[in-house]
Image (cartoon, rainbow, N blue to C red; front, side, top):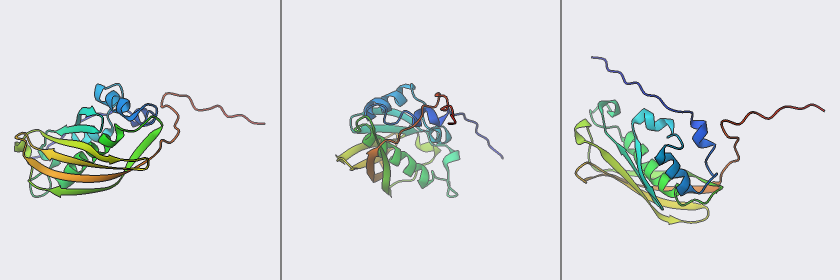
Length: 177
């Protein structure tokens, strides 16, 4: 029996152009409050940023069969995405204005299977160490009964945010000499 799922998202350029324009915690609070749109992957998977604080970020997901692998459980890539998001966004909260980050690696340990019957799951990210060029973060994933489902560590590279043109700004006029 075929199933379908429809979803929408906003222009990712709006949020991308804001990276580095404010301190990381302010940026993440703007995403949380809806002043900046969530990235498209959040709509695709159904993840929700639920909480941010200094060195801390929490994402949630209500698993459904659209997340299943051929074995009838939530695919490990969905776990990895939630854990990477929680760890990386925890790092982002500590960045000063003008800086950005990217994940260098992600090591995941899967501890329990998840199905649609598992209920809402949450990934809790926290920064373990943060320097000028790198940060180390971890994330733990829990089910509705606070059982640990998975654990991850992530190394992140910190670098100056690339200069970008705001999404709503007009393109510069061309001149000829």
